Length: 160
Image (cartoon, rainbow, N blue to C red; front, side, top):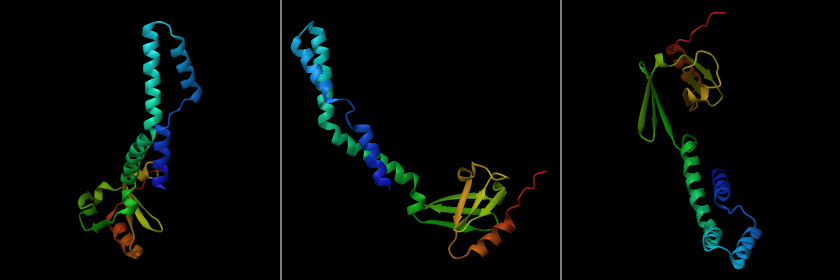
């Protein structure tokens, strides 16, 4: 899917978006002549359009490559392994060898899902939850992880 999106974006960014009649009109205007400056400007514009038609497949590959790299980087947590270490101090997340530590006091709530548990900094469910915390995936140990987290995160009770 990422490759298809990257190719589509590359095509959209690079494909010459002008009708062929535009080039024909420019060529006719150049042939009819006129002021030297006007003819030179038209010739420059025509040269740019012809170059764009000639090199758009190369630009397509460039934009598609950039798009693919960005899409893969944004979804890397789906493809690459992540390790978690839960201890008395907090949660250590290891991704690409880089540790990311958060104390238990950093989290204000958690939500258990089928495949994992989401630790969030928001006290109540929010649209920002996917961006505010960690999603820890289970490895056939859902009850054990949920119980451990429940013992370490103090869920704030809001008045009302």
